[in-house]
Image (cartoon, rainbow, N blue to C red; front, side, top):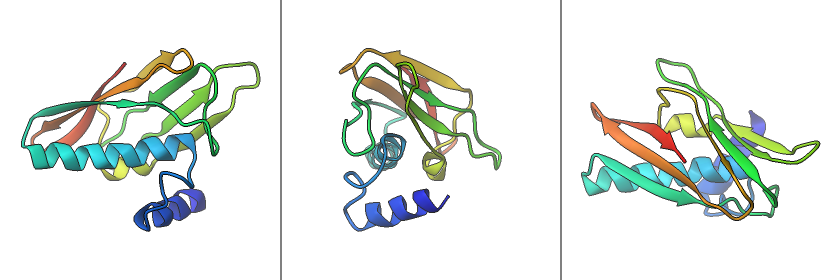
Length: 131
């Protein structure tokens, strides 16, 4: 949990997108997109995420998984590089801003983006699709 706390502190100081791992960078992008969705007044927002290679990132085919959360449970956000001896990164930081009603998984070739859909339901932001 210390790594997430350090990443959070760096993000708040403006360094978060640089000094974190692949999962934590996506979590902080989710935070930004939730804020943009709230400001827009719209019910849904889909955004594109492309994992950075450095530092602690993804350089090959990859998979993004967000595990079910809500009701006090903090689901994990996992980014895995798809090769033998796969490298993976995980965080629960996204749970500060969204719930995930069902576990979602998207697998991609190197360079392909992940599309994440956030919906407002009852005033609460939820990740409802991952492609």
